[in-house]
Image (cartoon, rainbow, N blue to C red):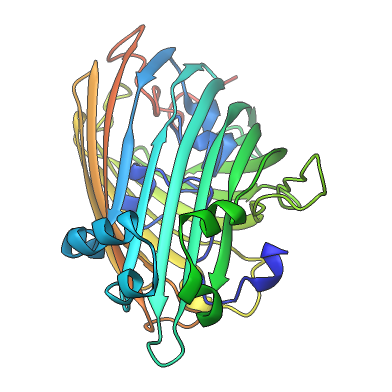
Length: 372
């Protein structure tokens, strides 16, 4: 029912947006190598060389309009009716909060995801309508990856898969004028579907080609939520919105600033196409570019998502990681029609069993000493 009223004027869907990936323009498939690989490209889990416990890692996101409409949002929360909503016309109200405590082993990760999202767009005063989405997800996520020798003894193929078992409650619908005039909190409660459970499968690969002592070319591809992750209600089959599949492919170039095998500092440049199976969408919205400057404990990130700039910064202090990012999404079918700027902040508490020598990333000069 809800799927039938969903228009094409929506942002391209993402189940989970990692703060590092969004700082890099969401061009992350080829260079994924940390805990967020389980969502983006599970093949990246093969690059986890140490055990890490991430106990608390809250991530908060909000749109630019949230800050300029605090009072109006408060009024709508108190009494959601036509008068309150009229103050929000032309605004994009968005909020997302998530927690992903996890344990990462070499080549393997197991975690628990809990996230909530609310998005409201009130458009067209001549023909008022409200497009609104509310989702609450929780469940288990696990992934595994391994690395093989490629076509050459200096090439490496990484393959990975991850599975998530998610319980979802929520809705994604358009409220027309007739319903809007009578809308209240009880009406929104009637829209809620679930809770219902679904199982999603991700598969991915990375092909690593050393092209110099300090440079690598990586080809990556991933298919998230193969065949869509559906949530069928136990009562009547009319469940919450499904998680749509996302096929992506990209290239990454990594340049290390030193020939030493223990060197950590590097720069990553990456480009990819996402949502390749989505139809009736501007192809430009599927193109993503990104880069990351890794200075060992400080990270600077830049990119392009939906033809808009992204930027991010990260700080790794071993027990504490802090990251921030800004990005924009296009909420219409064509590029340049309705950009929504968002901001994200994440604070993470955890620890590695080994600090420097087992940090994520390349630990040896494979060009000089390929694996046997």
